[in-house]
Every structure is written in structure tokens, then in C-alpha cells.
Length: 190
Ligand SMILES: [Zn+2]
Image (cartoon, rainbow, N blue to C red; front, side, top):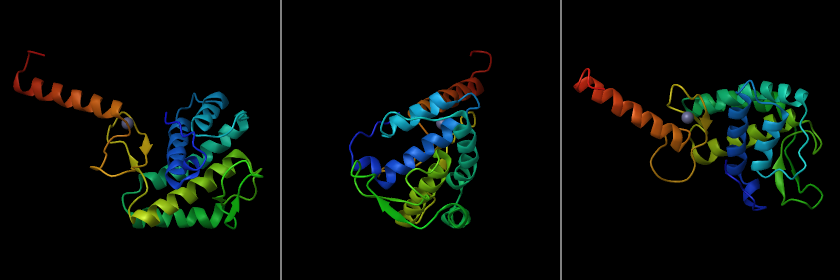
């Protein structure tokens, strides 16, 4: 899990988007409870202690579903249409907060600094994915090309387009493709 300890970088758009994708993926696991979700929040720079209740996790799962759809959108047009619906329904006036001087100034789109986790997650996710789409004129997220994975991820940085959420998925798929090719050329050997 990426750890983003620096005060300013962890409030950057990419950091917010990475955190959004990590939460969407963690919440997809039906076994994930308050402890697992709090661990994701801590790994992405939320200051300890992070108090998450089972009710928060249920509400956050509800918020993860539309964010996953945005991350899985095939085009910028599709992602923008989905984001516009979410922005209209779930974000308040854009405001800046420094959490009483404990963080650098950064934008929030939730109602206030004490909004429940689910409202914060949905609003901050919408905001991050909106800015990424704006900057890149491309879909803000992707779905892992491994059929057995299902994770969403945020492509960031330069370099070739990523197809997999992680090195682990890329390696597993490469090994599987190699095995399939070997079986096809030498039946009965594998
Ligand atoms: Zn994957």
C-alpha cells in the first residue's frame, strides 16, 4: 500500500484519487470491516486515530459503487456524465479547509469537516476524479485487465499505459499466458 507521509503531497489530486481507488477496492471485499478500512485510510495519510464504525463501512460501500462506475468508464465522455450526476447529488459548495491549521489548504466538497466518512469519501472521490479528468481529458480510472482481479486503479505518471492494477496481477497474467502458450504448442507436456 502506498504511504504518502508528506503533508502537501498527500493532499494532491493524485493522492486523493489513489486513496479513492484503494477504498473502492478494499470495500469490494465483503469481509472488510472497520479495521481494514481504517488501515487503508491510515496508509493514505489520515491522521491517527481513525475511528470507523460498521455503519460507516456499510455507508462507504454504498458510496464506493458509483465511484467504481466512474473508475471503470471507458471514455472521458462517459466518466464526465457519471461524475456530473454525482456532483449534482452529493457535493456541496466547494470550499477550502486547513483543518484548523493541521493540514495544508486543500479543497473539500463535503458539507463540513465533520461529515461522516461515507459523505467525505464520495465527495472527495468525485472531486479528485473530476480534476484528473479535467487535467488529462481522459477517463480518470481503469479496471484491472486481469479477469480474476476486478480492482480499479488510477493511472498516474508518464510511461506506457498500464493494464493491470498491480505488479502482482501483471506477473500472474504473464505467467498464465506463458503456460497457455506452452500447453498449446506441446500438448500433454505441461
Ligand atoms: Zn489486478
